[in-house]
Length: 226
Image (cartoon, rainbow, N blue to C red; front, side):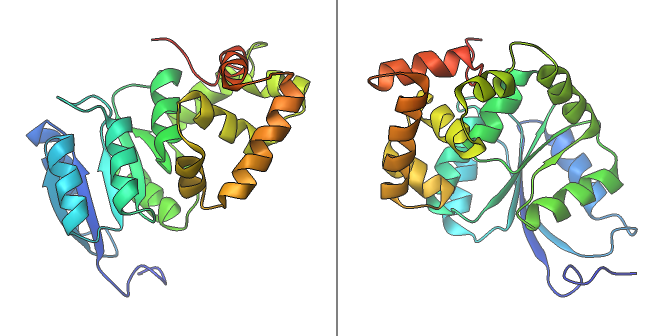
């Protein structure tokens, strides 16, 4: 039985991976007879090609690896979202390290799954991000849960400073050297709201400038040196 909302149109999807066998495997999963709705699929083997395709085609979903020749996945995501802010992006990777997950999600991915994912879960991930919700595969969710139990994790440190989830998000983007305009665009809120968040974060962490905010972001484990 087809699900309401997904049987009424073709979903335009781009697969970005430098390995042809991976792209073909994903394509076969999405085109399986058991899938109750249709995909119009295109492929790119590197970031530069993907960005050109996103500029010229109105994709709804992009599936992207982290490690590729030239541009890494997180930078490709940022560049794609500059052209298509409403694009829903699913990271599909062999890496379950927290640094990789954080980079891809901070760049704007709506979900993160591993390449050993089974077809039903892959379809569920796509359905979830199309509803503008976050999706993690079981292995990735477990990895994040382990981190959350670490006494030095971001959530506990954030609670010490009484930062809200939105303030934590803004702080991470500041530490990644995004401008207020870029943060406002990615979060779909006004520049004035970002200015307000920045001032509140400065007060809460006791910092006087951006350098102090970046120091706080390292302490909160929002960014890592890898």
